[in-house]
Amino acid sequence: MEGLRSFYSNKRNVISLLLFFLLLVSIPIGTYLVSKQQIYKPKAFERKQVEKSVKQLMYYSFNTPCFVFCPTYPAVGGMLDQDKVQNNFNILYNSPYDAFAVSIIDPYVGASEAAKFLPNSVQINQINALRKSKELWPIVYFNRFVGPCNGRRECKAEFANNIGGIDLTADSEDSVQALEEFYQIFDMVLNLAKNIGAKGVVIDPEFYNNYPVDLVYEVAALNQMSKEQVIAELKIIGGSIADRTQQTYPDAILYVLFFNLNNRDSATKYIIEGILETAKQKNYALKVLEGGEITSGYLHVSEEALAEKTQSRRKDFEAHLAQYPNLKLAATLAPYYDFNQTRGWIKQWITNNAANLKVRDINDFKPLFQYLFGEYEYVWFYGAWAAPYDLFNPQEADRYDGAIKDAIAKYRQIPFCGGIAGISCPAGFTCKLDGNYPDAGGVCIQDAFSDIPYTLYYRISDSPFPSNPDESTIPWKQYSQGGTQETISFNNPTPGQDLFIFVQFKDSSGEITTYSQAIKYTGD
Image (cartoon, rainbow, N blue to C red):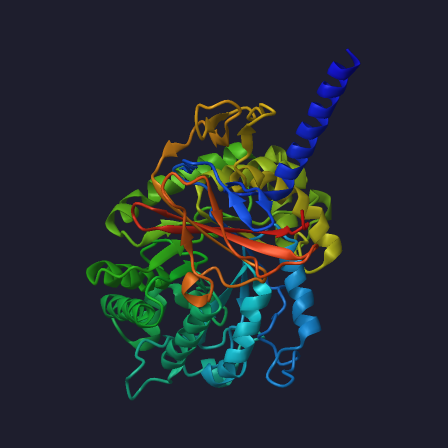
């Protein structure tokens, strides 16, 4: 009897150790057991995906530091100030975000100033080594071709005061060259995005210099043109943006923070239509995301209100999405930690909506976060001064990170199930085993997921590297059909060393999704 008890005790200890080990090395696309030089994988790994689930969560804020695009970070021997840059990247590593919108320049300067902030090739390699799987999306501003100054103290008269609302003609003798300078900035920023591994660029379309000239009839009056002439010129601007994207970064995503294709008075509408019409006509691969700042909104009194707004927005965009294959919708929120601590425009919004407000603190935001993560592939959160929410202020960031990580967790992990311990899946998930043999293991698949065939690739390194396989010296390796394990070299890792696993799915349409995870090699 004592022997039997000892047997069961030992069995429980083994199972406990096994479970602990599995949890340590689980990654978002499944569970990998890493031991010395081997990665194990179920024989028939299947990835399921909801119709829409978040692929990338981005942080956008005017508080975001300039990272590496900053004259206060002087280069030493061609390298960036390691301590300052590393500190910023450490904040990114520990955050729940996949991507960060970063300004190279402010919205008010010209191309010659922008060029001063561009990193050189040595610095770009340094950025790619530091960022690991995080993405930095450079921002470009429509404001460069908008004028004249209209009460905005940041507006620079030498750039803006000769512009008649919008500089419509880049190559005309009458042009003030504002549009031409915007094109130069756009080309530089887009090329930088490609070189630092971002999926594209963020476009901020806000007319900071002069808000009223986003109205077509205002531009027409300032330029003594008809509305029809102005609309035609605006679409030409959009067409040029599409052509330049095709020339520099054909697969780029143009992440536009807001536009409304149903607002016939908006100048921005026709620039975006020019992009979409040209992309469709010329069969370009670029994508345009409508970020939702206006059409979805930063704030909602409840999850129900957000769901209602989401459905009405889909209806508003239904015809446009059918018309333009390059158009997709993204969404946003401007979270606050405690409604009593808000200020400025958020405080005013809360006052105006107090009677119906259910979202009073960061925990109340969790259902809203989860709703957006289940509805959209691209979501961005605005770190607003009015919240206040500054990711680079540790006291403020700590108040938000936990709630965001909790909300996004189920979209980032596929839990292990089955095995010798008979691990069950959480509610709403079904265990998909890799076989019908005893103690077979598998992964938990959300019940709402539908089958989509995927090809699985992986690579592993003892140092971080870009997620774009073309930029890495380490090749992507495809799992063999029916294989149960793959053996690869870790370049003689030492105990305690971080290893970086990148796993890539490619579906039948050719769309690629990349996941990554750093694990610590124990030497076992």
